[in-house]
Amino acid sequence: MKKESNSMSRRHFLALSGAMAGTTLINPSSPIYASTAETLQPAKKTRIAMVGTGVRGTGMWGRSVVQSYPNYIEFVGLCDINPGRVVLAKETMGVSCPTFTDFEKMMKEAKPEVLIVTTVDNTHDQFIIRGMELGADIIVEKPMTTDEKKMQAIIDAEKRTGKKCRVTFNYRYSPHRVKMWELLRAGEIGELTSVDFHWYLDTSHGADYFRRWHRLVEKSGSLWVHKASHHFDLLNWWIDSDPESVYALGELNFYGKNGPFRAVNCRTCPHTSQCSFYFDIMKNENMKRLYVDNEKYDGYLRDGCVFKNDVDIYDKMAATIRYKNGVQVAYSLTTYSPYEGYRIAFNGTKGRIDAWIEESRPTKDVNFDEIVLFKNFSKRQYIQIPHGTSGHGGGDALLKDQIFVPNTEDPYKQAAGIRDGALACLVGIAARKSIAAGAPVMIESLTSIKPQAKKEYKRL
Image 1 (cartoon, rainbow, N blue to C red):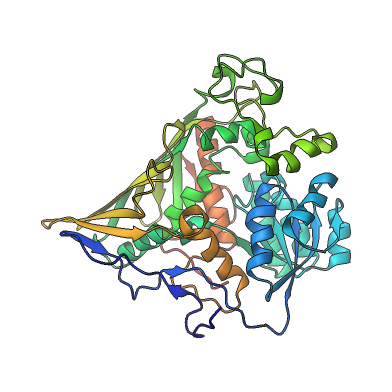
Image 2 (image 1 turned 120 degrees about the vertical axis):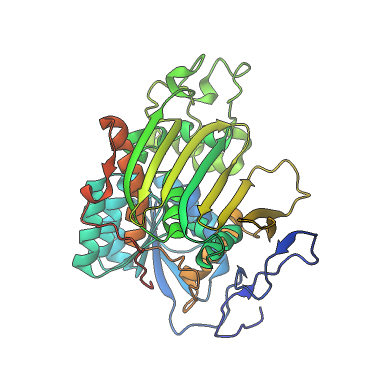
């Protein structure tokens, strides 16, 4: 691969050529990059270990990292409570490092400089904290953790150990979301006053949360935390302020106890011919090997019934969020929509930014996302953003470039640390508490973090 200039470690993201009447295309000189990892050999590779070797660990943070950054990193240990799964992860990732089922043993023998945490959400805190205590910086999947007590313990551990924790909010890196950030920073709609943000999970992706361990509040913190922390982080980043208070509503109306029939899991269900949510895990060889073949070790059923009676998370949610700078947000999440995506509108004193982003697109003929810029007393502008070339709207590869390629720039302030991870989770935690109390919850009542009118940014 051709060596790039030191002043910019990734290529500029190219705009669509040509223009339609009334349509604005991305400026080719704007540094919205296509992913590329430089190939200069560093003086020393970073020693990395991973705890949690499910699909997310072995995919997003496993094989792709090994293949894309061989000059910068080396895996020195893999750990999982499931001995069969961790051995398969080693094979899938194509690494030669030792495997462990004992986390302490891995940390003390492998001595990683960086620990990647991709375990069940409610265990993140213990691995983050102990990993820091044993000398590693942390890369953790969102959500950082599931309740305010665990959150405070992580905040305290970072201060105590001097180690750093990076939270992987890949949604920040999608090109169309970067363009929204640029438009807001440029003052295109004047002073931002409110945001309407509505997310729709379809009957494939949305339903899958109710098959897995995510269906239990104890393990996931509910979709307020597990899924919506992505959305709340985007809001915090776009608005450039901290959330101050949350008032929320939520119910379980579709999945769980509301189903017409139920079973333990799809493979043992007598209702497969009647159920629109039947999931044949045996048709996916990777899932079969990773989960079905290793059920004997921990009893985890990856194809659980979406109508199980133990489902205790909400499947429809709405919240009003107030920010320290006065911006108000109307947010909702629906988990049984016929399509996947979101609608968002930013309202300002001089105009409005609108977008309807459909992620489960019915056609591949459209290869861009569209943002509509309305300025008061002016004609609307249509801004077309070419789709990214990696997962999550093009964000995955760009996020990993920034993490693993030394000295990669951060022009859009996308790198997220503990404070970012905490505030994204705290909105969801506050929403949960608000529903229980029937009243608004103040963010500052949850941890030692004090919301600020201007978002705090620190280079990681």
